[in-house]
Image (cartoon, rainbow, N blue to C red):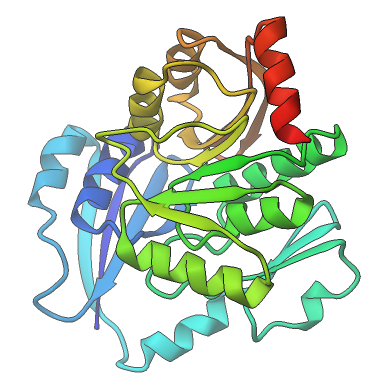
Length: 287
C-alpha cells in the first residue's frame, strides 16, 4: 500500500484540494500545521493518482509531494486512528468498535467510513453537526432535509435522528452511496439516496440543506440555485475562501445567520429570504 501526500501552503489549499479530489474522489486524509496543509491518499502501488496537475494548480505554493510505502495490514490498522467524536456533550459520532464513548449522549451516530469520505472527526463536519443541533434547538427540525455530498451519511443520519424527515442524501460516488446506505441501516434510519453530480446539476432543494463541500462546489451549487432554501448549512470552506462563498449565496437570496471557525476552516449557517406566502408553504412542509 502506498501513501501519497501533497503538502502545500494554507493559502493555496483551496486550489489543491479540489484538484486532488478530482484524482481521488473517494476522499483524502488531511493534516494541518502552522501555515501548511497536507492531503494524503492511499492505494496499491501503480494505482495511486498522478499528481502532476497539482503542481500547476498550486504554483509556487506547493511545498512537497511524498510517496511512502505502508504495511499491508494498514486496512485493519487504520481503525486505531478512527475514534469517537462528541459534539456539545449531546451527539456522538463513533465507529462500531468504540462503544464506550456513546454512553450518556442524546444522539448517537455509528459510522463505518468504508471507502467513502466522512467520519465526523474533521472540523468542517463537526461544525456542521453543531449547526444542525442549533437548528434543532430552535425548533427547525421536523421537515425535509437535503444533504449535498453525503459521503458516509454522517450529517444525513444525524439529521434524521434529530427529527428531520424525509432526509435525502446525494453524492456522485457509488462507494459513498453504498456506505451511506449501510450506515443508515446500522443506525435504524431511512435515507433517500441519489447519485448526482453537483458540478452539473442541483437537485430540488428541501427547506433545510446541508452542504459539506469544497468552496468551488459550493459556489457551483449557488450558481444553479433557482430559489433559496429556508436554511443552508455550508461547510468545507477555508477561512480565506469564506467571503467569496458568502457572496455567491448572497446573490441567491441567502444571508449569514452565523459563521463558525475552527483552525483554517469556516462553516456558515445561511438563512433564505422567503416571502410570507412561501414561508407558509415551507411551514406546511415541516408539519
